[in-house]
Structures are given as C-alpha cells and as structure tokens.
Amino acid sequence: MNGGRPALWTSRHLDLLAGTTATTAPLFDPTAVPRLLPGHDLWDLWPVQEEDGSTALFGGHEVWMVLSAPALGHPEGRHDRARIRLFARNGDGWEDLGNAFADDASPGSREWSGSAVRRPDGTVSVFYTAAGRRGEARPTFRQSVIEARLGRLAGGDRFSPHEAAGHREILRSDGRMYLPTDEADGSPGNIRAFRDPGWFRDPADGRDYLLVAASIAWGDGFTGAIALAESRAGGWSLLPPLLVAEGVSRELERPHVIVHQSRYYLFFTAQRHSFHPADRAPTGLYGFAAPSLTGPYEPLNGSGLVIRNPSSEPDQAYAWLVLPSRHVASFANYRSRRGGNPLHAEAAQARADFGGTIAPMLELDLDGMTTSVAPASEGPAERRGVPLTDGRA
Image (tube, rainbow, N blue to C red; front, top):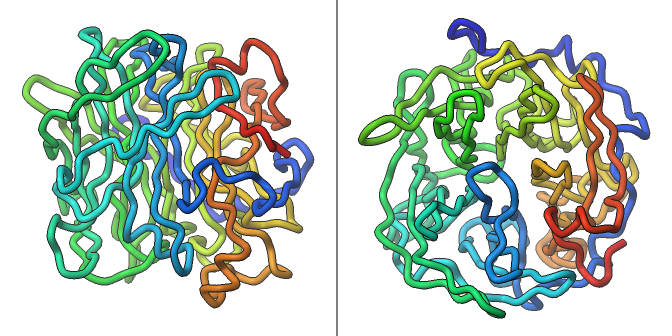
C-alpha cells in the first residue's frame, strides 16, 4: 500500500514463476511423519510470542497453538470440527495441554487460525477466527476476529493454562472495503474470507496491528486480499488492504509480517486450487517486501514465490509460518496420487494419504528481495524457532 493504494499481485508476476531449488522445499512423505497426537488431525500452528515477535518461554517451555480435530472421515471435514489446542515444547519433547478454551466459550461453532502474544502482565492475548455461530444446527461460514485472554501462565517445570477471559469480537468485514463473510454454505477454498488474524507490533511506531485474510469484489466473484487493522483507543480500526491478488487467487491465507535488515517481509499462503485458473501457480508460501509496513510492496523473487512443494508432491505441506528467527513452520498435508486433487478423493483414500501433524521445519534465507529455503540447521537457534518431531524427515 502506498498512499492508500494496495500492492497488486498479478498474472504478470505469476508469469515469472520458476521452480528452482532455492524456492522448493525438501521432499518428504507426509504420511511418514509421526503423529504428534494420535487420533487427532493437527494443522495450522503458531507460537505464543513476545511483543517483539520472538517466541515466548514459560518456565523453559515454548507454548504453541495448533488447530485440531478428531481424525474422522475425509480430512477436509476437520474444518467443521476445529478447535485450538495447546502444546508445551521443551527441546524435542511435546506435551499436549488440551483445548485452549472451554467448550462453548467461543461465539463460533468452531475455532480457526490466529496468533497469540504475551502481555506485560503475564496474560496472553489470543487472536483467532470464530467461524459460524455457537449452537448452529450445521456449520455455516460467517467469520469474525475474536480476542480472548488466557490468564497468568504458571512457571516452573510445567505449563498449565488457566481459564480464558471473555471472548470479544474485535473485527468483522465491513461490507465496503471487504466483502461480508455471511455465507451459509461453502467449502474450503470456495468461500469469502475474513480470518487468520496475525498480530504485529511495528517497531517504527510502536503500534499494534492485525493482518487479516480478506476478500474484495472482483468481476462477478471475489479475489483474495490482505486487510490491515490498527489498534486505537477503544478498539480496532480497519484500514485499506496491503495487497490484492488482482483476480489471480481467491485466498491469501495466514498473512504475517517480520522485519529483517530494515525491510518488512509480508508473507501469506495460497493453495493451487485457489488460483484462477486452478493450478495456475503451485501451493506455496508467497511474499512481498517493503521499506515500511504500509509499503510500497514488491514481490520477492520477482514472482512472489518463496516456498513451493516439490512437483512430485504438490500438496505435501501447507500453512507455512515464518518466525523472526526465519525458521518456518508448516503441517504435513497430503501425499500425492499422481497429481490428483486430494480434496476430491474418496474419504478412505484421502484419509490414508493425509499427514495431519507438524511437518519438518525449514529455514529461510532473506537477501534483500531474494530468498532461498533449506532444512533447518540443528543448533541453539532452533530453540527460538519451530519444534521438530522425533521422526523428522
């Protein structure tokens, strides 16, 4: 955004896409990664952060939030049962702490992705997406941004969450800049968006912001955008979008920003079936960079592509999250069946091919407007990054 004008991600940028080793994640089998929580699907994950963006520690433990659902039927059905679950991590060890919130605490019928930050008083602000409405007979797709507070977190050798304070709606699509998300029917990749709030404190002005996956009108349908909201006295105020995918993609999911060497790196994820036309670009992590939070933004690597899955496994991972340490988290998604779309597979086949747990961690090198990805190196820096499973590929 420059002077109120969003950056545009266009077909011209996608024409520059190239499948290089620098932007291709290492190959792994999603179904071979040991499940962190047997009997449950786990996907989008994020750590509790400090206000400077670093990963918070509680008595030597990192605390992570992960979307979870019982592993039943077609894996895509998990979105209709999603809850935020807490995990404590110390080294390579994980401890399941159960659901973050009590049953029926959320105003939605399920809980979708977000972010979390520890406040100076020790409480944790959890920003997440409430989808649908509590008590509805069947899942609908209304989305709003909620803030809840987890109480003071215990120190010592164990982490124990306290009951969360009230869940308060702080943002909803306004129906003017951003399309309303009031659809009763839909499916992943085919609904308008107002979700995935990513918290960020701008070191330039000390203010708090939220980045939100949103939708704007485009032709006869809709297109993906990244909304920005600023914290002001008494609430949050929606601002013009930072980025609009000028008709090329319906969804720009899980937007987030890190600052590295005086540049603001704006990252988001997109799935191959959400592009216009489908498979116009690969499932991957995409990014832009700018000298300030509000722009002007230019695409990384010319095209915007930062990390893609290997061509032989186009759906092996998704929902990449880049931390200030430049470690990158994602989840193990689908094993390929000769390039077919796993969303359309029979339930038993899709279930057999679904990873449903945390993927091997990656590390991202940022050199101005150029990036490269590699497996995460082992060492002390890993303690501030994304955890690995014992059976990492």
